[in-house]
Structure formats: C-alpha cells, structure tokens
Amino acid sequence: MPDGLRTFRELCTQHGIAVTHQRQVLYETMQSMYGHPSPEEVFAAVKQRIPSISLATVYKNIHLFVESGVFRELSIHHGTLRVEMNKVPHHHMVCSVCKKVADLPDDELSLQTAPTILPGGFLVERISVDVIGVCPDCQARPN
Amino acid sequence: MPDGLRTFRELCTQHGIAVTHQRQVLYETMQSMYGHPSPEEVFAAVKQRIPSISLATVYKNIHLFVESGVFRELSIHHGTLRVEMNKVPHHHMVCSVCKKVADLPDDELSLQTAPTILPGGFLVERISVDVIGVCPDCQARPN
DNA sequence: GTAACTGCAAACCGTTTGCACCCGC
DNA sequence: GCGGGTGCAAACGGTTTGCAGTTAC
Image (cartoon, rainbow over all chains, first blue to last red; front, side, top):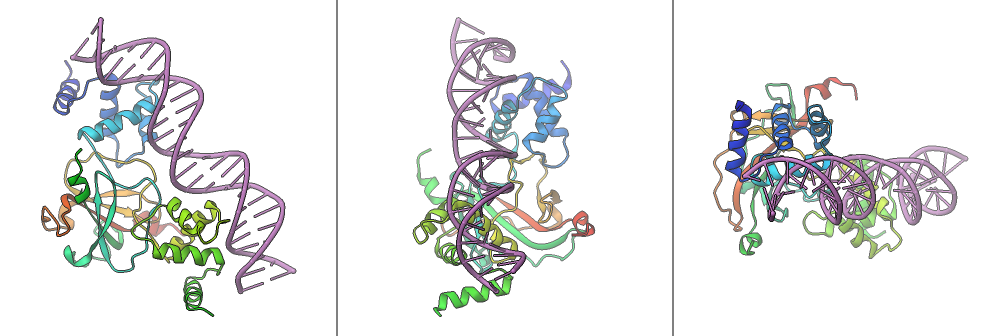
C-alpha cells in the first residue's frame, strides 16, 4: 500500500470519515496548493487528476473536512456584507455556532501598537482581532 | 435646517459625496441599528421610512459609505469559502487592495494566552489576528 | 445643464440540493 | 447488502448591472 494512502486512511479513521478516491485526491491537492485557494481553484486542480469530478463533490468534501476537523475555515463570517458602524476602537467576539458578532472593548484585550512595515514589506494599516468561541446563548442551548 | 441634516451634510462634504434623501435616511438608520445588520436587514429598516427605496440603492450606498470611509467593512474576505491548511499556528496578513491572504508566523506578533472565559460569559476557543494593510505588490502597482 | 443618483428587472456567481446511480465497508 | 458518496442539473440567495427617468449642485 503506498504511503500516501496509508496516511490518508489513518487520517480518515481518526476523524471518522470514509475513504474514497475523490476524497483522497482532494485532500492531497489541497495540501499541495499554496495559500488559501477558492473552491473553484481547488476544483480546477483536482480535475487534472479526476476529470469527471463535480464541483458539488468538491464543496461537499471541503465542508466535510472542515466539520470533521481536518481543515479549518479561514474566517468565520456571515456570508453577507457586514459593516462596522462603531467608531470606538474594539475587537470582535465571533460565535462559531451561531456566527453572531459582538463587540469587545479594546481594553479587555490589549495589543501593542504594531510596526508600520512588517519584515516582508507589508504596510500595516490596522490589526483586527477576532476572539472565536461560543456565545452564552449557544452554550445554554442544547445542541 | 434640522440638526440631523446639517450634521449629515457636513459628513458628506468631509467624505466628498453628494447628499441625497435616501443616503441620509440610510445613514441614520444604520447608525441606529444594533450590531452588524445585513444589507437585507438594513433594507427592511429603511423601507419603513422610504417605502419606495430599492435594495440596489441600499447596496450601492453601503459600498459608497465603505469606499469613502464613512463606515468600514467588518471582515475583509474573498466572498468565497477559504480553508486553512497550514497546521502551524500563525496569523494572517490581509491586503485591503487585492484581498490576498498571506501567513504570518506566530512569533512576529505574539499575543498572550487568552482567558478561557471572557467577562460576558463568552467561551474562548481561539484568537484570530488579521493584520490589515497593503501587500508589497499593491504598493508597487500604480493605482 | 450635466453628472450623479434612484428604482426596476434581469443577470450573475458562488453555493446548495434532489435525485439516480455507484462504491466502500 | 446497505448506507453513504458521487455526478448531474436545477434551484437558490446574495449581489451587481444596465437602463430610463429623476435629482443634486
């Protein structure tokens, strides 16, 4: 049995999901891609190894990977445009269950003033801190 | 001239945008709403004062407010699902121009271990730090 | 007067769903 | 053999666009 498959098989067992060819190729492809590609980009890449794969399968499995803890969602957001109207500097508490966003006063969690230019040449405008967790409502609610 | 209009007029002058009735009501409504409502929710609220307003106008003006600096987008993301495949703890540099996300090693910007439960009863799982700014490519590129 | 703004309807695009068939366990 | 996975096509929902009429400056 090739190494890749053995490893992937173990990973699936660990996370309680079934092993399929599509799943394995998807996983390997994602691992090999640089940065944070979109589902469409992943789809295009996987298609080179499995031309018949469908975009729906890619979506279903990316979600499965995220739900089962193999990967993580980059940013938890509502999927719709949200705007900041609070002028006072503050951070956000984002509930990973219900996705609600609450403001967190700056002084509960202070952060040093950042350097203006980071080593790589990135020009810093501001730093956004999201505290990800579970809000009181969702803690109380039975799952 | 009522106070609200005078203030809004000044705000528009400051940000270089024209004053319209829809714009003013939209602004006031958004200011008065709690949290971070979606465009649909804002639309529903504004409709109570201007029943004929269209959703397109709401979208156009929210974007205008964001572009001209009256409000700020809550989270800069691609508008599509992105997944974290890098297991090493790190933060992100998000370019506000091209929206690209690059990883930032944890040690360039360290953060104290967070309390597990915040004063409000929020259960913390992890803290996500985004450094928002302009990437080298976009600094070099003529606007 | 003219450029910008509004409202409408249609188009768009990323994502999800229902279903018939197929495959892993 | 059965339950879950796959591929397809159609549906969905949030957002954008083109356009004709209207308004701000």
